Image (cartoon, rainbow, N blue to C red; front, side):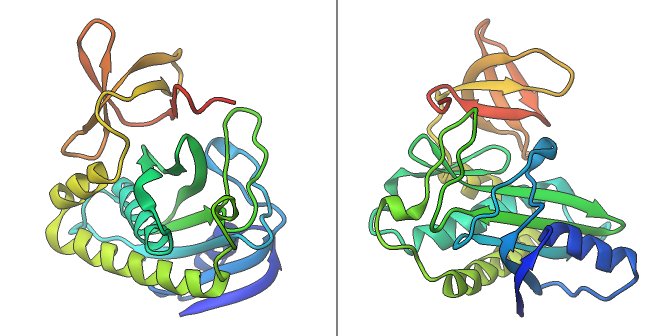
Amino acid sequence: MIRFVTETGSTNSDLAAQLRAGEAVPEGQWLVADRQLAGRGRQGRNWFDGSGNFMGSTVVHVSPRDPNPATLALVAGVAAYEAVAEILADPSRLRLKWPNDLMLGDAKLAGILLEREGDAIIVGMGINLAVAPALPDRRTIALTALGPAPDRDLFARALAAAFDRELERWRTYGLEPLVRRWESAAHAAGTPLKVHPPGEGMLEGSFVGLTDEGALSLRLADGSTRAIHAGDVMLVNEES
């Protein structure tokens, strides 16, 4: 089920408010807005209202039997990749970047924001179908760079179906196949990266892959490999 609204502050915030109020927010239900007046990304960044873009959120109710809830970022990334790849004549330039970006070439096409509310994880996605926001520190792109903008409502239904499939696989088969599928959609091993872990300086290295737990594996200049569990990651040629 998808609920479309003309305008709101943030679809993530709306679902969080419903959960805090004790309202039932079932899995599989999405809230999608034409405009967001207070949309946000990771690290509290403001996010473009994106008229014509996909801006929506859903809820996953996690249990102790589920894999690590943080890996829902990988689930969402693979779902976004699959939904976008279906509508591209040539998806060869489409890539995932850890932890939560979908890239087209070296430009950001989509972002994912996970927030926890009790035993629920709110998964928010913003995908540039029509217009790309101007960001000060990285390149962005919309699908209109390749042709007409896809129909937002049809895309929303395709994305919701893809997310349902990936969520079921996550619960049924665990992390190993998810990690392998995410890696198959990511930039190549050896890609130069800059990583800014919380509370540390900038690290530079190359992409190795993901650990079994879904963390980023970064090879440093001295040849050692470090697992990155949180932080901003940029392709070296992504910076504007």
